[in-house]
Length: 381
Picture 1 (cartoon, rainbow, N blue to C red):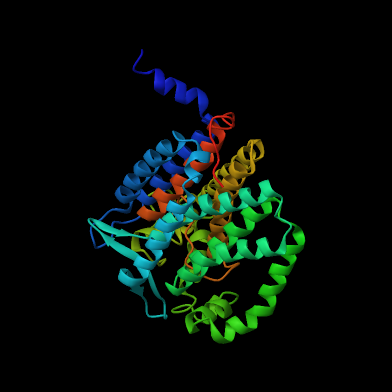
Picture 2 (cartoon, rainbow, N blue to C red):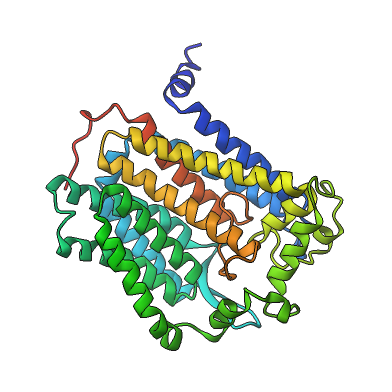
């Protein structure tokens, strides 16, 4: 009984409903990936995802054992490590190219496979930016235009560096995390108005000088992908066909010829929603949305109960990451948004992405479990 006491104490302190939601998402993700055929490389998406989930849960549990305030005291180490990862990837990373003009250098080679450092940098950004926001909040500097500009510069570091890697989908997610965390900290609405007005003004310049040809074609084709169904519109045309073919109940697991033939490009990753639609129909798609909405709602509840701005900002960072990826991925699959290479959180195949997402879950859970420890940690500015 003495051996089990730490485990029992952990269960008493943790948020059991939060765990139940996450475990349900993990099981559903593995179920869908089990139905996707093994690629020619011979490495099963199911096996890779299962290992990533186990590592992610282990990392999440380890995260909860140390008070989040203590972790953020070492923000400068986290920031330096993240900067090193991005620069190293830019110099030594692996490029992924395609016939449509994509050229992303966002992965590094590790023993046994590849790793996408920007996924881990998202977790580092949550920690460092939450620390930045909470420090300004304590000093009542969030109303200062100078400090708002410095916050924007902080966010622009990963946005710009990831953009130069050719991974603009991830750059957009960083931007959304910046907005969610700033809003959660209480940055005045006028600054958001200025930000979006600036984006509107800058878009024509970005179209002319920043966006590449394949990005322009994605922005122009998504409203009518049927005009080029064998090339630029292929992903969305086939994805929609798979989602619609499942109708209400779906064709059944392991029974879809579309999934077996892999007619939807990258169905295991960017278009995993089409796998659910084809095999489990409207019910299966709705279940994915409900599970992710429950996760987001529970994360906001934890943010609300946080005893300090730091914990609240960490939760808003995790919320912003999951909400943005969900919105962009579903919009992409349903042809409401252009294809931008954003995966569906926790469901899409990808070892580095899955493992790092669970670290984000661990950070939010950390805030819940240490919400009463306000007098036990000394915060460093």
